[in-house]
Length: 507
Image 1 (cartoon, rainbow, N blue to C red):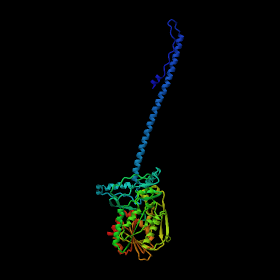
Image 2 (image 1 turned 120 degrees about the horizontal axis):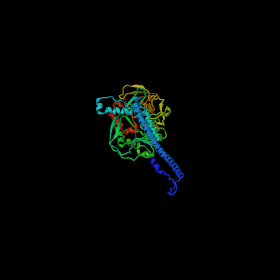
Image 3 (image 1 turned 30 degrees about the vertical axis):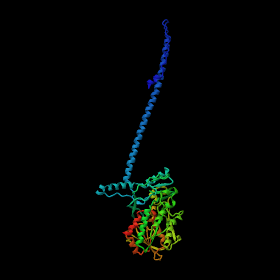
Image 4 (image 1 turned 135 degrees about the vertical axis):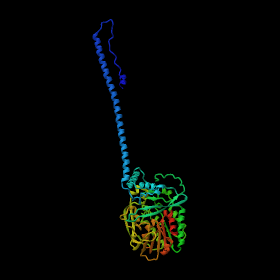
């Protein structure tokens, strides 16, 4: 302040001559002293003014800077509030006005729909839950946002071996319950929509705590390794024994029919890195356990047939299914066990499409799989045959192609090229005359086998145990079936799908 500045500048000492009372006054000297004192006072005042001015200027500058900073902060706060409000109301407007998707190509399913209002639904909460699910499941541009999320994860350094989903180490078989879950599966063939009912197993035992795997992210039981998705198998011996006992009862009901069991291993048996083997149950041990409990049913060793060719593309990298090549080696093994003719691969034409990204990307949403599509290929036999499709009750017959046209089908559904999916009964009449009529009871893995058997049996009936409304034993007798092949992947054999086989036996 000015007072402080004044304290810092010492006042000049007055310069007066000493006054001698005895001497005569010297007016000239007094005047000079007065003028000098005046000059000194003026200099002092100027110096004090400059110092005070500098102090005041510094204080004013500090005050102006504080005011400027305050105005800047206030302006930034206003802009922040405006941006937040714009984002909030813009997002709300987008959620209301933008078109909501109805299907998910990546997930191969129909998205949730707005539920119809009913008083009962309102009271029990199902209506509000349905509304919440609808808005959560049909966010505009959901595919774009999901893709951005995965790209961000990659940019953050989440690379290499990645595990999607919780994986518990194999343990003793738990108590289990089963429940049916309805899933609508998207298909792009005009006018065709398949609704599947899938049985799921709920484990009621508390899983042991596991140390997290170093370098892997636990986020659906899928390991991503070397641009390949791997589903981690965890079947129990009790599940395998249940499957074997069901087949034994089928054989007891049809003692004159030759029955074969071919449980197909998945890619985890051949491509799981050694450091992750502790996360899976041995599929080979599980399959051997099943075969050791069969009574009269002939086991077919698809495992060894595939293991010999594991360096070939016998499984899809981005899909949970095997490839047409893998099914060829298994079909060859089955034909040898059944002692029927088998056409070489040279009797087939190879077809292929690029850009395939299958169900393992759907399950994991891993950007590595999306960015590394693969070739999808299948083989069409030279042999002549007739294919007839029926509904689940063996009604509404219509002739069609054994191979679905997938030219305008989304890549995730290309595996449907074989017999157009699962939810129907298929009858194939071939030019082979050996009085052998085969019934194939299968899951989706069995679809890829059918083309390879068109030169091996006179007739083939294809039944998916999940979509068959008749009594299977009676059906076999009515159609003079000579051979039955139970074929499915190890996950199916160790799940409620086995109980679906029992259901069609007794219903």
